[in-house]
Amino acid sequence: MKHRILRAASVAASRGRVVSLTALAALGLASSGALAAAAAPAAGALSADAAARFAALALKCLHQEYPNHISHTLNSAADARAPHELTPAFYGCLDWHSDVHGHWLLVRLIRLFPDGPFATEARTELSRSFTPENIAGEVAYLRGSGRASFERPYGLAWLLQLAAELHGWDDGYARLWSAALAPLEGEAVARLESWLAKLHYPIRIGEHDQTAFSFGLIWDWAVLTGDARMRALLSDAAQRFYLHDRNCPLAYEPSGEDFLSPCLAEADFMRRVLAPPAFARWLSEFLPQIPRSRSGKLSAAAARWLTPGVVTDRADPKLAHIDGLNLSRAWMLEGIAHGLPPQDRRIAALLATAAEHARAALPAVSGEHYEGGHWLGTYAMYLTSEAGLQP
Image (spheres, rainbow, N blue to C red):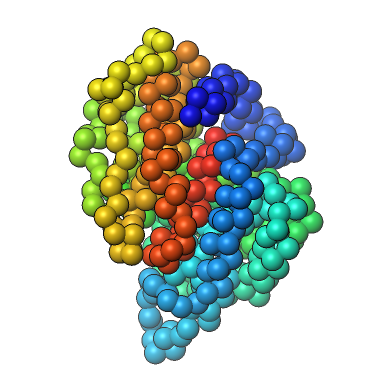
């Protein structure tokens, strides 16, 4: 655990370079090449063995059509069709959003391990999805009557995270796939921008509709692509929804089917928007219960300020959400630490608690049960490759 804490503290200490790039991007002064270089992924705590395990989970379900749980508005009997006909690129992994982020997982893995034993198969399967015809079918589906809220915001945010991964990768396959995906990426951006301009209240639940988590994914896409309008909309949302929040009731979490923490996700989004000193002040009011330590050591009582969630049945698709909660808490805690000034006395508690959550959840990412196997690999990948720390 010690080496992980030291590495994350080093990342926080070097954050001035990252903030500078973000600020330049906000002013339109950073080149796309500089941003792509800043976005080059690092393996973080991800081993080659774990990478192969996560790849196997995604490859198993990427084009596995059944079982399938679709959120589908039928406008007539003609809409009663098989999933691969409705959404021809993203019909596997039980549901649309899981299939989208399963594609993200494979793209990121190939970037990190281009010669990995899974790379050839992954490229083949990704090429199977990313065709102009398939993406045209996806766009047509989204534009169908009654689908204005389809996969909003969670699935659309993951789609932009997938697009960002492709944009930041200097690779021949990635350029072809990115060009194919572009019409769907544009459709997602237009939908999200229209929605953000009208959204009057945040959504503070622990599942797909939560706004804070999706805002973080979308922000990272906007920074990488230089989309000033999206950044402005998200900055405005941060101001309206979150800037004046105080005393988030972390003790009320988790609800029984959460896979995202409403409190931690909000803080993990706000550390993207605020400069470190301002974020540190905001966090003191928002989560005053985070322990502080002068020496980097925590008392036994302080170390229990946030304990991992308990999973009672991994074969139950909703109860298995708690494994995802522990994984997402881990990366959000790391993100919060990353957003603080390097000498902040809360960093030790945040990183130690992140490590505890990771230890509780990573062994469960096994694929033993499809209920978790179709999506938990992405959460494990996001955590162990430090995706949220490298927008």
